[in-house]
Length: 193
Length: 193
DNA sequence: CTCCACATGTAATTTGTTACATGATTCT
DNA sequence: AGAATCATGTAACAAATTACATGTGGAG
Image 1 (cartoon, rainbow over the protein chains, first blue to last red):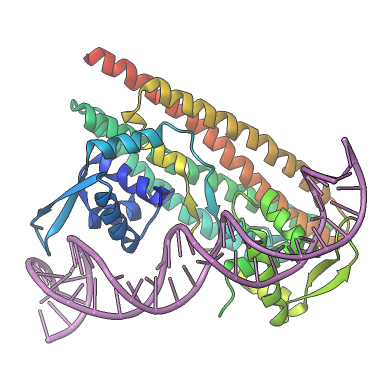
Image 2 (image 1 turned 135 degrees about the horizontal axis):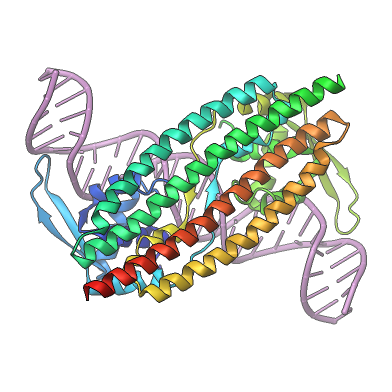
């Protein structure tokens, strides 16, 4: 079997800094959720596979709280494999957005209900925007670091967090636009009726 | 087994107008690819399942070119099931974007290579923007229709196409921002070295 | 006569999630 | 003592893709 996006996602996480499987799972859940998410049950077997291939190694470290941690780091071979993959053009993004599937049918819903739903969506995206803005701020501090590896890692983190902000900003704008379009169609159908 | 997003996606497609499995597959591939995509091998079994549940019916129709078509339409029960689902708040979008996973590591790549990759991405997203703008235009014509069902369907199509445009516009902006950030970090590391 | 688009389906495989299983440490 | 967080794993299941399988009709 060849390496999957899942493999490279974990390598990319470890390129930031050495981490345990648990840390990687948290990172996928809180930092990269908007473009890449894997549960812990995908991560542990993949880490074992990466280790067998000699792309990562681990050191057992006592946890401050809880059982022993296996802290993984990239091997030179792992760094090479990662960077070779990174230097290639990326595949198209895959998106599954229920909201848009539903929006496709908003014309068949009472206008008031559709607008209510869009206002709820707008609120959720505004909240998320603030979250990613916070991630941008924390990355911006680290970008200034003297350690070139820390700065390079922070540059990447800042780029992805900025994309998180951009997605939410444009989604909020879309919600506003959609609300306006449905209001307009409401007055139009009243004019007809 | 209860209904999945796949079921509702097909119902939403049929809410626009009666279609064959082949038509639905084309629609997923060309119109909704940016938020929902299923291959034909998922669609045919799901259509059979929806028919068993009484949510859709089909009529065999001769094709202009090729074998017999099964043209499906929503039953009243199918319309109810769809609209009840549509009226509920949507689940969070799921995204798998390799580009951002790679961008996370752009700090470890030669700046020139990273910029090259981002310029390529920018070009692809600009192209896609034009594609969705075309979909918006064609939907806008249909929104003016006197038939209320045609107008309502076109409203939804316009909303989703507008979101397609929004995503691409914000992605192009992000590419520009990312290129600028990498240029800036290049001059910074030169100043240090 | 071969390739392509139309058209419908099934089978095998891959991929990822949910649930299961275990265990340490801290807080209430 | 019970819940929550930390921590690592496996097993059963669901979901979706790729490949397989078949057939029509038109264009070059």
